[in-house]
Image 1 (cartoon, rainbow, N blue to C red):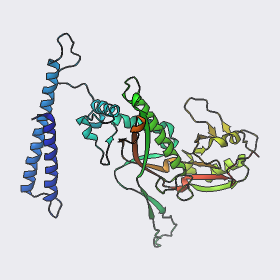
Image 2: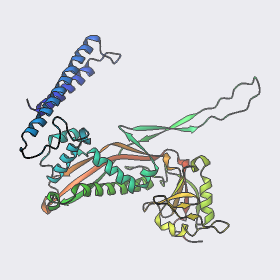
Image 3: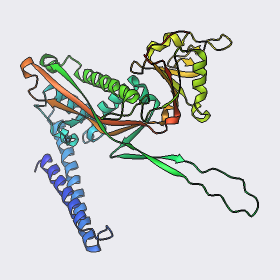
Image 4: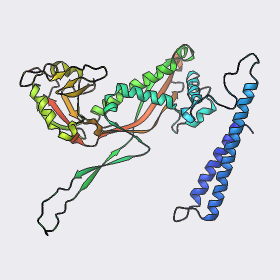
Length: 393
């Protein structure tokens, strides 16, 4: 029996054990002594098969070493794999994915079965996934400022709607009871995808850095779409943004002509506890005006950053800019109260025959994500006019 046949046998044994446990649970959701003994025997059989698979893999590795040419020096020790990680985290899985991409998934290695996607395609290797997330964090300011949560299903967040108040009472007087009520915010899973086309010449050209190209292009495209939704999304088929009319931050004030006092009032419209980690978010087009604003004593509110990697400051608070932020709004708040829920893992899928007439191959990356501001009062917004134009005082 081959290694793959043994793996298939183990998979069937695992499924049989799961089905047995599910079918024999009693009213207490447990197994009786006889059923538990039988289930343990099934577990032992699975362990025996796994042990035999490991032995066969070691034997195969030794055979490969022995079959190498005599004049080729050994670079690894027998029985010891130099490949780190298991499953989607292994180097073997990453190389198999790259090979599948280059062959338009015509040559799919058995190792990719570990990452089969239920909707078709394959889950990206964990190394790819981490590097894509690095791109998302680098390109997406909301992933840097918000709170990221991994979810496997609908994620409910309890938020205090009303809080009990303390009361003074005289000695012997009855207690005054208050009510504490809670709202629930649900993080859903909205599907986001990006598709790219690659010419067959580049696909099969080993000198072309296909891996880095796909990771970079997918990462930037996903990051841009996410940031737009995290800032402006209306919650219908996409996340709810902090600038959304419903579910976004609180409109603290509005002005026709942006002045220094407007920025100061915006800062103090935010409650003191939120100001500890607060920052501004605005569109680049507003900066030209913001950098000229002064306080009542004629001092510029803008403070240049003197350290690499540190954001510049306005009225003493960090400033982050985004091309997706509205041109007629400035937000100020603690964005850790914006929760980003990542559902599952990202996956690749091929587009069969769609671009065959152009000698091109299409690939799709997809993810499911949601985002919501769980405490609207944690973000205050200054609205500038009604046309989106910013004028100097």
